[in-house]
Length: 267
Image (cartoon, rainbow, N blue to C red; front, side, top):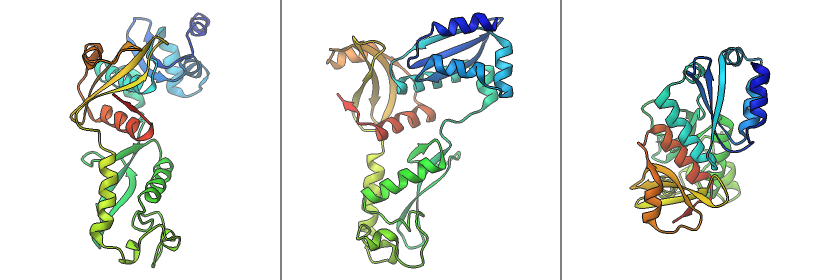
């Protein structure tokens, strides 16, 4: 059986999409997403992890769906896992994003940005796969918006922060800058991280060269995705191509991460 499955994997393209692993009774065991489906499936067969070994013992067949764009693949994978709750997606309980960027007002009245583990009931501004990624992004945000490293918990000091010495911080670390002025820049950053208002169709890569993917947003919420001809420009055409979806916390995180991390064409 393993030789037969390996030969099937050899015929699968190394492209962006989701894949499905079924057991011998054709029950869905696992749904995964990858930018390189063939490569990821081969990793399943090479891994010595206990759960991977269990999956291999139960595999009956493998299927896949090409999606063209990684963000659409993430959204589709998330929907499928919620819908079918495959055995090993539940068992693995793996979180793609484990840390978030949060805001709080410090004792002096300045808004502090900080990285922490994701928690139920706390609304994160953006998400990260690791604490290190979050810290690196916070350094970039602090520099771009002329914020204070000390207030953002990036620099420990009893006096001014390092950025103040370089004249990149305006002195909030030593209560020199007005609170309102500083907090306005923090709020400007937070506002730029929110999903845009209005009706928007984001253009992404399609499944082949003659089409494009469309991600539909309306009034600051994710509404669904679909595909249309590459040359299409009409919103009516886009809307007809979109499969409507219900927004949830995971889909919102995926879209926000996409908006923040990429230069997106907004139609």
